[in-house]
Image (cartoon, rainbow, N blue to C red):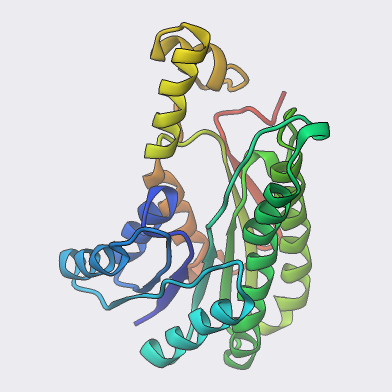
Amino acid sequence: MKNVIITGSTSGIGLGIAREFAKAGYGITFNGLEKNGEEIAAQIAQEFGVKTIFVAANLLKLEEIKQLAEKTFEAFGKVDVLVNNAGVQFVSPVEDFPEDKWRLIMGVNLDATFFLTQAVWKHMKERKFGRVINITSAHGLRASEFKSAYVASKHAVTGLTKVLALEGAEFGITCNAICPGYVKTPLVEGQIKDQAKAHNMSEEEVIQKVMLKKQAIKEFVSVELLGKLALFLASEEANMITGTSIPVEGGWVVQ
């Protein structure tokens, strides 16, 4: 049985990815902020007949990141796949951007991605197999105003992905990034409602005229699609795909 660590996997994109890995029979280490994280992991285990654990590691704390890896080794004996999915966002003009928000975004989006990868890297090299999948963003390839920390952190992970691909190549380790556009998660649904009130628009107008304005395909990305892509990148068949950043954003970055 193969296994996977997925950060930020108790809700949204991470949970969608976890469900696809569970369907494929993977053991899963869940991690996230939801207070009922253990219950979520147990529900997936029961639904798909796989082994799961939940580790409530704070990704801003290096010791807890290391514990996340260690508890996975204790439960499964190995790590086949790491999906660095956890991320945070904050919007502000550069001159007003709060220092604490900058450090939070860099800590979760970039530092945790590096340090958790580092915590499993030696093990993957020894086993001559590993898959590291970084869930970045279309903002890992392009920029938008008022998102300085988010764009900077996601571009940094794009660069890190390339370095890991080079260092892992001779050891059977691949590293790739998936770059989603807007995904209809509970978080985004809340943003739609807030934007509708702020702009005195209907929710459908917000979707089409604000959120999906830059996309060629005027639809949200599904979590199922992201999960299936991650699952493919984790497979033996994807052994020649490494160092890539794959846009899944309805054609926004081609403009």
